[in-house]
Length: 157
Image 1: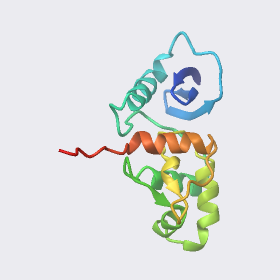
Image 2: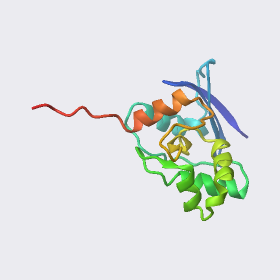
Image 3: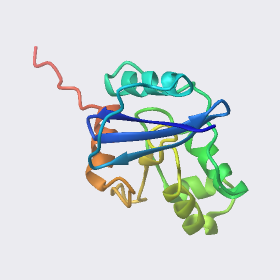
């Protein structure tokens, strides 16, 4: 039986759904009530998301169970291969999946990613380096990219 929880993040309230098979959905809400209790099946995912936002985690190891078509699953697996702090373009992702002409389908599957942050669709940008479409809003995409790759001030001495 699926459980759900609402947790506060720097980007708004995150909504998680999952069961013994893994987490099936993580999304972001503009606002909402934060859960007082965390169901046992969701505890590890909540802990890992909190560690991510605290700057103490760069990848996720809890069980995931996103629901989608075979093609969407293929795209989401490819997203998991984008290293923390790095980006790729929709074109590069399409090439990696073996069909440069599938760029629109790849972008569509990217946009249907049900596991916000964990399957890092925010790491996909336009070929010209622009921040393109993001279901959570471009300001959140920019925040996530900056969180994962903060500009280090060089020492003058």
